[in-house]
Each structure stands twice: as structure tokens, then as C-alpha cells.
Amino acid sequence: MRFFSLFIPLLILPIVIARSYDHETVTFHEIGHLLGLGHSSVPGAIMYPNITPGTSKGQHAKDVEGIKALYNF
Ligand SMILES: [Zn+2]
Image (tube, rainbow, N blue to C red):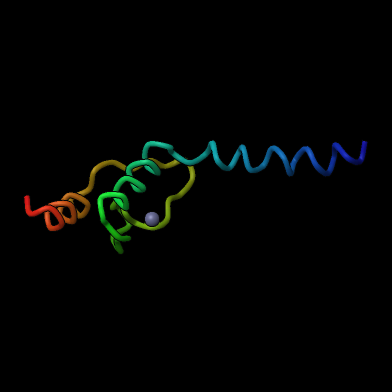
């Protein structure tokens, strides 16, 4: 019984944490890296290095500005 009380929470916790992040936001962030963008210091930008669990981000002017600068749009 002690096994379950100790290990089940340890097994479930990472799943709960992983599911609390918005996958679309994380995916856009990683695609930004694939396209050549680095991290942004602007908290609203998708390329900002941290995200609060349970929040999502969309396209930000700073991200668009970065892509335009990289690819001469
Ligand atoms: Zn990053």
C-alpha cells in the first residue's frame, strides 16, 4: 500500500504538468527556433522563453518582426 501512496503521485505528476501547457503555443515556439528565431525579451511574444501553465499565446508583432528580418519580407 505504501508503494501506491508514494509512486502513483510521482507517475501522475509529470503527466498533469505536461497536459497543463498549451501544445499549440509550445509548438509555435519550437517552430520559431526551427526558422531561426532566438528567445525574445517581450513577455507577450511566442518566442519568450517562459510560459505560464494554462495560458496560450498567439502571433505577436515581435515574432512577425523577427521572421521578416530573417527572411527579408
Ligand atoms: Zn525556446
